[in-house]
Image (cartoon, rainbow, N blue to C red):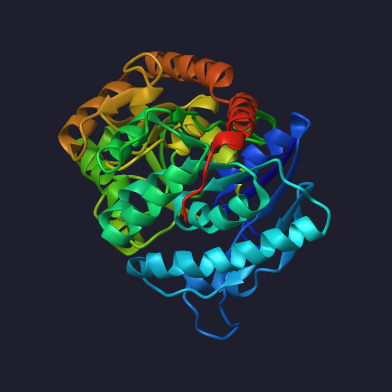
Length: 403
């Protein structure tokens, strides 16, 4: 079938990390024999000096690209630098995406289904085109679209319109679906399809050489994720501070973000080896994970957590938080570990246990890898999404659209 993916969360030729999970799903759908096109609405940013990193990545985004065999369009929309303006941005994106869809159809691509990632702005942008073309809309919901957007009454109204207009709704975790049920009704038909790992790319990645000044005789603990308060890297520092100096592991932080300066100050006060790797290409992430014994990310707001399953597939023992996304695929002490959120004392006790029992830690890591490789791959994700698309197409003849 012809699948049109609409997602502002998508890699660009100059930045391969944001939205890599959407790209990997698209690749898996192609491997199953489907034709996939992508529209990734992108903020219009003039190419001027002194732009922040957040906006600079958009200034040189091309209008079109061909990434790993997938044609991607990056139509520009007028944006505003605040998430409080999202209802207005959604209107702007709707116009931009509508024009882009018309151009693709005029060029000969006739979609059988449109899959929007996420409700705002992408799903909202697709509604008029789906109605005009009589093409079913499938909306895939990721964490931030519910946890952040639902704080606004206007955003909730727009999200409600998207959910009502979608033939099928997909959540990437039951945790996220539960949070959505707190704000929206009529989600009894929603499906849960977890994200996956790209096994071919993962298995081909070499093991990274440890950065300078790390001790090869110590185990390696890594936190993979944006350096922000909710991810819990500060709790890892607090936990390591509680351990005897001679027992502390190497600590790697892969990623970047607004809390880096504060975390670097914490590192300066910790008498053990710490290195900030920063943002790296996705394939290098796997290399660092292959050099890691424990991936500790006690994130207090995690709808799913791709970082955890990628680490599990790389034979890491993972540590996440109870009640968050990882609790759906981590069986405590069997395929990983779960600690209470915001509890560095409990985390310190667990890390001490894992560091003192490397054989057991390695066995749990092997269990985790086996589980992910059997259950959480992009091939399995694509198979389940294919079933959703077929269901949406079958239902579309009797479905109306809300505008």
